[in-house]
Image (cartoon, rainbow, N blue to C red; front, side, top):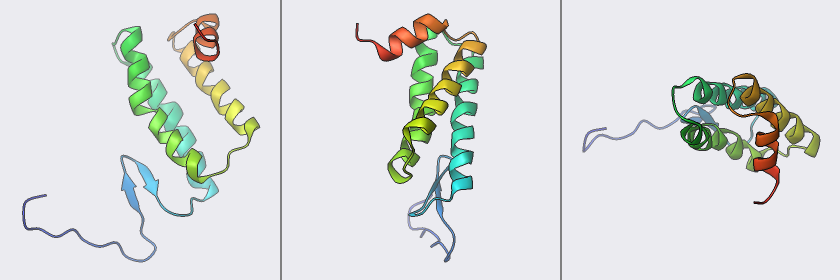
Amino acid sequence: MSYGNNMKSLDEGDHYRYPGILQADNLKHPEVKKVRNEYIMRIKKSLKSKLGGKNIIKGMNSGAIPVISYTAGIVDLTQIELKVLDKKARKTITMNHGLHVAVLTDSTYHRK
């Protein structure tokens, strides 16, 4: 945006979208489902890149985690929903040869 230009205001019913995430006071359930799918898709994109292991994890932390952390503060996710999402993410990482199951579980849930 060049200097001196004004931003267009949003019409009623429109919502601001920040890096692909809908910014609204009330998120609908279908939007939350889209966010979950976006989270898994961004994990897959990080894994398909030609980066090394450490940089893949950094990519997931900076690209995928913010997508889910935004909605976690707005929508009340049950413990079961979080476990299902976690299991799906770990399964995706393992299937795409990101990390071995034992390493992934140990490094995620145990202190070193």
